[in-house]
Image (cartoon, rainbow, N blue to C red):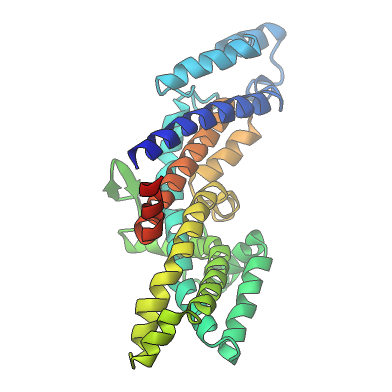
Length: 326
């Protein structure tokens, strides 16, 4: 396992370097931020001073080299707009995105697994068919439309929940501030989390149903039923335990995509997370923030994938045995 972890860490460093180069080239090619940030009536001397102050007068290769040198020290540049370290700006918004993504994944699991197992155990029943039809809708409906409908129904018409913003972040964990420990925070996160969870819920339902349909045909399940074990014990001890492996694997990968692609939900609900920050930064071509955000997302993908691999080996003993033989 130690050799495997070292190999994965070395691969991660290569991935981060390649990604930084691609991002740097891509961001450099989309425009000149000086033209957006300074007064349109500024003369050429003021434009030259602003360009030099931002370090944009250097050749591209030198800008990238300075970026790598500073990144090795944990400095990903300063925001052109806020004039603060870009990584600090992202870390400030990260807790909001993390709690939104984790809450959405929680909703997808806590609702999707029982519904998927029910649809798998009773595939021909009206309930099973209705669950699968609902899962198809979850895949098909656009996120922005669902978000707007949630706001119209629960915030505007019924007035039950707030439509925008985030509750007061009064909880602290590992130095990060979260809002889930208050009623106000839970009320604010409910609508955006449900909106973001819709696709995950549909995915978990289909995974759980497919896994249940496969597991119930296995010999150990038939043997457990032949011994006279109660249906609930067969389902939760034998069926549920064995369908968790693919669900954990897929959800681990999906958690990374949930964090990365929560942009639409954050923008609709004015959720102050990294997704809203990146949209604002793209609008003003705030290059350091864009590059830092994408590198942080890639790093999070790498960490999550590594955690999924470790969890997979814990859940499936066959993986540990194959690693020992290797």
